[in-house]
Length: 389
Image (tube, rainbow, N blue to C red; front, side, top):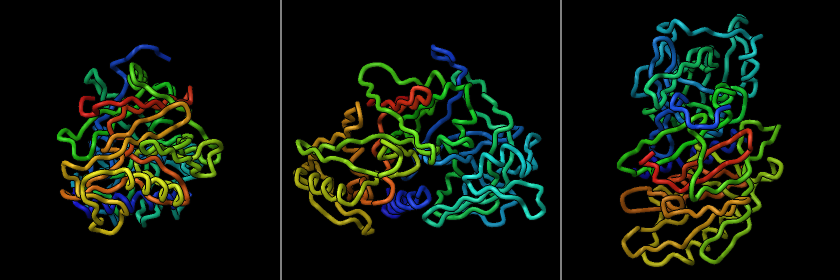
């Protein structure tokens, strides 16, 4: 992975903090979607409109709104795929300012157009990325294991006409999977029983894809499953908070204080943030413990100067065992969860110091089947080869 792209992913991790400041058996008709690793983020395949138009967008448990770049684009970032054209869809409808759909996006900066006829949204990110456009009701389509598509009429989306920032050209927007009313998870509602799961392949995997499941197929079970409470904060309904008690590096156990928000939760789990962000004091202890216990390899510097602990990963490099101690769940991490490859010759610690909001990023989640059960308020981890899902 080129250093510049990993550096951008790291900066997006930091930038996001500033913005943050039923059936009982497996059902093949439940919706699912392909998930693809892409340089620090994960892209999910959906379709919008009638007839269905394919969209590839960032899968993001740290935000709510579903948005894509739309024609006409007054100012859009470059994307590889064609733009969605609402005029080509028979099911596309803008929504009024007085609608429930518009009200559901108040946290996303919804407002009225200059003539008062159309609800608009505007979202800015800490890395200077932004999107703004019209709020609309549109048919969103997912796949299923039967091969038959699952259509979701009148899904609230953002049709972005002005979008810019550090977005990859391989994606055309964001699919919000957070806990707020505008997210895909919330809009799917009782049809999925408040359950979804994903399995993130390592960025360098030969097979970069896996499957995101919704509903009964998202239940994580079997040997090796660890579960921890999902903690909600009514003042921040988007975020999925967890309670991280400590992190062990070898025999050294480092207590974790984390963010002082989210009730008893002190860290959020976020598929849209690359790195794991932790308070400066904790990061210093963690970094020192890892450096002290690493054997072999050659310590080096990050070519871009972003990461602080990096090595040349030769055959002699041995990393200490690292365990994340969540409440009720001791999650043993692998080298892929602890270090990120910044180029062919350098790997760096995939944690970063940040004193605002603590975030458990997607590198730490790789090769775990991770299931969200919102009614039971639990999050489950199961070590898994995600290339086989």
